[in-house]
Length: 245
Ligand code: IPE
Ligand code: IPE
Ligand code: MG
Image 1 (tube, rainbow, N blue to C red):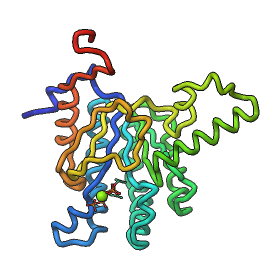
Image 2 (image 1 turned 180 degrees about the vertical axis):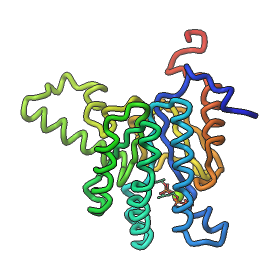
Image 3 (image 1 turned 180 degrees about the horizontal axis):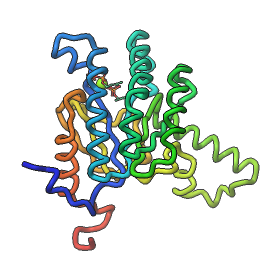
């Protein structure tokens, strides 16, 4: 089936978040080192970003490295950081051609200085692009993010900048790393795992969850189009009844 031509442009998800999982298993299946799986994963990233840009999806957030991933073997962490730097250098062209703005969320200060430098360069070069926003979650953990929010808001309450009685959902939204992004409409996770792994817990409160067995290095535009096609078949009720919609 040609999923792409069956996608309704007016009903595109405004924000897609992806847990790019399965690089290690992909490599193992090929008899390769895990690192090779991460390398091949960058192809899937490019294809997915281009697919979103082609359709006109406004916001794509990719989970690239979690706060928990720091607990992986040192060599794997180092390789992932190097891969981040080399991908940023390589992909700047794709970002500019597709008018994509790059931003990052997470404990960016914990990244190695080379990665921080490359990130800030690409972010400033692409800052004025408006076709799409690509957000990389790096050293990101949703609980860590929420802790930051609580600290910032309680500081403001203490200094009488915010009245605690006035705290509502929008107060929280404004203090999240994702403050400039709409809620996640669809979350895709590859590799068959069906869990959230500390990703965008608040932002995904009403997201449609889509799980596929495809391993991330094998994920292509067609898989993305299929996911969006499936998303558009779902009825999002937000607590209401079907008849009310
Ligand atoms: C996802 O693939 C990439 C990162 C978490 C950085 P994995 O490395 O988790 O691959 P599996 O789950 O071991 O197959
Ligand atoms: C989640 O994948 C993090 C990223 C994709 C960056 P993991 O492979 O680390 O997740 P768990 O630990 O298996 O849940
Ligand atoms: Mg994994």
